[in-house]
Image (cartoon, rainbow over all chains, first blue to last red; front, side, top):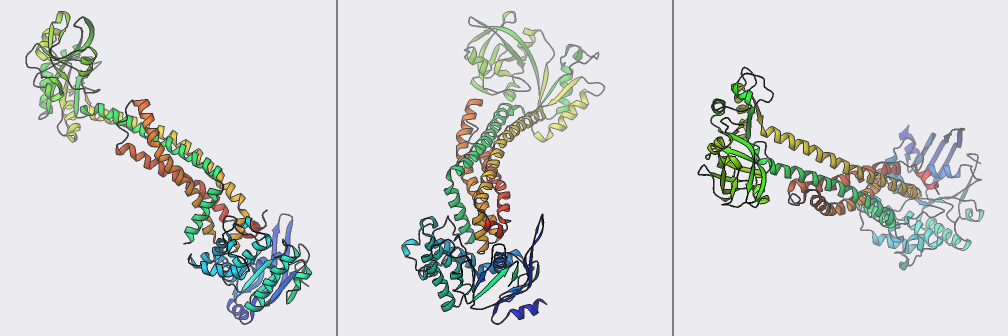
Length: 233
Length: 388
């Protein structure tokens, strides 16, 4: 069965949900966050996930990000069914194939901009001889070199988000997962960040899955998935 | 390389929260200094006692049985007859048997009156038991050798005369080396005269005790048993004491006291450990979101654990190193205050407490860091990311 699913996920499909259900057991009763969701995301897609609060957007993104596993159904990422995978394997999958961009940037406050970008690369390669690569990625985010040694608290919101995108890109993942990437930015900076993501999708072939409430931001995506009460509508 | 990165992160976090880190380090310093100082004090105490008793560790002391109700002359008078001594000598052969007279007397030295112990020994036996500091050993029967403390307290020198009242007077021919407390005789606080002189002066023919000097310490038990078999065959006429066993008991007792004081010191280290536990738990709580971020971007649980253990290790290393250095001063101070000497401070058996102290400091810090590190590594990344 596992083999069949693996084969199914080959080709252009990079993420495949099949009858995926996610249930959170709570003292007041079980909460069904996702209800038998089936969905295919191809290589190079740019997808916006929209829906009201509590509809299951974050659960969907968490499952794609291998931060959680389905209660039922199968979820294949890069041809690998993540259901029943060990925490160690899920962590390696996140490190090597996925890049995360958060609404609140979530840079490590103890590290400089450059060190924040270095962090995932050192995790992957175990080597510190990666400064050139990190600088290159930061420069590609239109960040001035003088900012590389700054701590996150010394950077503006837009600069922090560019560093966060550089951190997500440094391991050259195929999939970028963005949770409200412009939610904490003004419209001008938000637009600049969206241009950057659009460029990464168009010119570098990155698959981008983005959760947003903002219809104008969703317009950058090729496809919008609307989710209501744990089901794709 | 991962390890170095996590060590650096831990180091930066310690620096960022320098005040609380400093307080935790202070706790470890106090704990280490206390444990080491107590250990050094205890060990110095054992060494000091051991030094003052070590010269008597190779002896068997035979004394008349106290409380004996037999009909033998030696029992009724609580003394040992010449026949008893001969029997002991035969049982202890080839080891040296030294019969000893002892008593006390008022003495007049110059114009000063005092009371002191008088030991009567055969001139040939004296060099076997005692060492000389000044003058010479006894040759004639009217001379005396004086214990070092007694000589110092009464300003006695070679050539001084000591008047024992009706018993006669003796001229000091030698001053003895300090011998320390003993189980056989304590000449430091008295004088030693020739046995013949003692017999006449004290009108006593029988001996107070017999000392058997055993050449090989491993034979002590064997000789002791031989004397016991010979002398106490029918009834207990003598008590046979093995000084090595007494010495060992005393040293064991002081060793236990030393261990107890060190354990008391260890309590302060436990308090320091609780302080580190508290600080590390605070650190985990403050950094829940950060833990969520690093987990989501590919940090393994074991790496998170390692990062927090490094933090505990850094606190422990700094605290233990400073504590270890300061404990030399602590050990010096307690030795000076309690023993009035520091001669036992820089000996390996005392210095090893610094290694123990530093080891315990590090161990306590690491153990205190275990739970917070485990807690941090087991956080659910999704919950941790949502944490505000």
